[in-house]
Image (cartoon, rainbow, N blue to C red; front, side):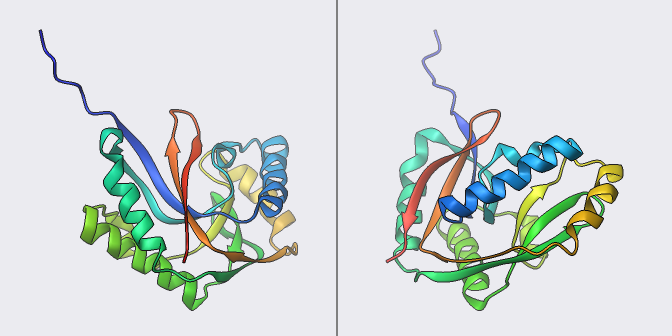
Amino acid sequence: MNNFKKPSKKRFFIALLPPKDVQEEVTKIKEYFKDIYNSKAALKSPPHVTLQPPFEWDTENLPPLIQELNYFSQSQQSFSMTLRGFSAFKPRVIYIDVLKTSELLSIQKSLMFHLESSLNIVHQVSKSRPFSPHLTLAFRDLTKKNFYRAWPEFKDKEIYYNFVINEITLLIHNGRNWDIHSEYCFK
């Protein structure tokens, strides 16, 4: 009889989430994309700006991950985030543009460095591309045809939010959707 327990790996990612009221408004836009353009994949996670793309982690070994996220967040300062206008990665992604501030660029770079040096969490593609902060509204299941129908409607539409970010969020994939696992407040 084999008594070895198979490691339980789950997918995680780390993001910045807007305040609840902004999340609710953004979710309404995501639902519009689902209803009008048949694109619902973005509804599988709360509205967010990804800092560390998805990675696999053994759920039996969560304490070191949680400890490092706590340690990292305690060295961060709250900062202002601005969502302004709509943009696209043509021809398959429509998103709300996030103002690229020095604070936002710094936290993303610092987090990726910290996770790589402390836990060997590395996302090779992200290391080779510039960080492009955005809040996705429609992607993966947005067809090219529907992209070209939706884009004229959104490209010049105005949207603006400004709020304070004071925590990072660890999200876990439950097999269907991304759920908030834990939040780590800045000092």
